Length: 130
Image (cartoon, rainbow, N blue to C red):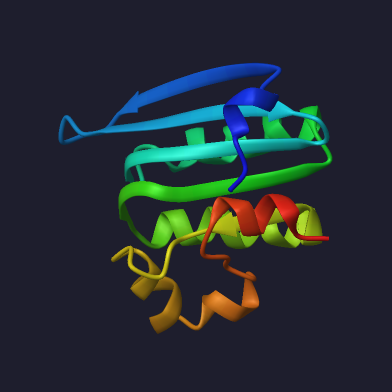
């Protein structure tokens, strides 16, 4: 198991409060050639632009961008839209992590985006992928 914290160069956190008082937090962890964007909370229409900005900023800072949705508790179609756009723009440089046991994974499975976006189950998988 990879110990990400031992490799960290810098961390940037952006928190957005949604219309219903729910928060989405985007924590960007930079190390080597990779930026890991840890997505926490509820990502919906009110926070989707912050997700997109965070992923674009991460891409400018590092070659590989990992969107880690392990701690994301809610995602809607606007979230999927951002990830599809970023996938089109970044291609293989974008890696998306959604554990199989996470209820959000069902959204990707139902919409047949799991394979199309190359969804991975663990952060270790995403970071070690060649």
